[in-house]
Image 1 (cartoon, rainbow, N blue to C red):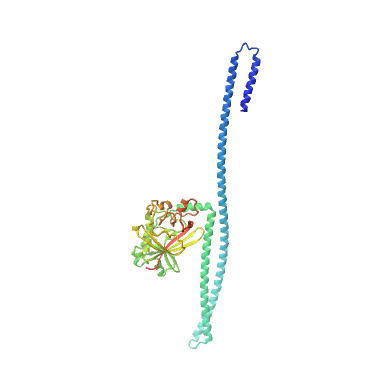
Image 2: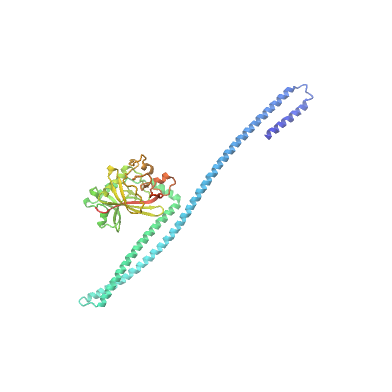
Length: 450
């Protein structure tokens, strides 16, 4: 506006100068012609002013747009800073936990070495005692026709008692050493998992590699591999309990003939108490459990790694007598859970309906509300709801209701943020408690009687 006023002022001065020069020749020029020139000049100035006004308004609008974009950028940057701070805090916490576990690991190693030293000393003492006993036995052999003096009998009896005591001590120490080694292995695995969490880039590469490794169909292996076993199939054990009763003491893959069925292979988990038949195992996400009804019925996976034995085989094994289902779980914090249920599984005509009754373990069991529920997959919805839980949550399971428990869901290493993604993973939710996201699961069957 100042520029417009200045131009008008210049125009007026020009007019005045023209008027002063034109007075002597006023008779030769028309006054009306001068007015036309002024009007033309004023019109030009007004147009110029209007253009300047429009330019100023357009510039203001562009500046306002720039300020709005800057405001959005500031908010995004602030949110990103908050997320970065949270990640840094979690990383520091994981580093502290890793340091603590490494310190415990060193203590366990030192304790293990100390126990091994004690065991060596005891073994030396045992050897010395055996030497003494051997000498006494030689004396006894030489005096077999004579009466053994009472003092030698007392000495022999005392030495035998000492040897028996030492034997018990050795067994207890060996058991303690084994427990320490197991604890050391567990701590090492936990440290390794924490280090994988700290290195997110390596974790992403590992995840992509594992997702690209699609396992081959092993249903033929689970069904047909038993054809390569001994020709005397009639003599095969009925389950893993019978495998144990026949003298096997190592866990592994065995052929069984359950309930007069065709022979098939199973993984037997054998301990000092007996053998159980493993029907499901999750441990590293190497097998895709989002399979069809046909796959869940026949079985899939690797019996020495992750697998689902198959509904047909589970039904065949459970029909041999009163069955107990053992549920073993481990979450990402390293906490372990154990439950037992009296177990019955109906056949294919009833869509493999499950019946459970809690026997022992945690009172709020992982499958307490799964009884009298039919099995469902993404291509066969056997729930009482129109919504297919298997499509919503992934994997085949006894869904009732959707989301409470799913041990065959997607293997997720980091806690998902969205509720939909959380429910698609391996999880269980005890009554009135938060969902627990699992690192490893194992379901096994054992029989009370045949």
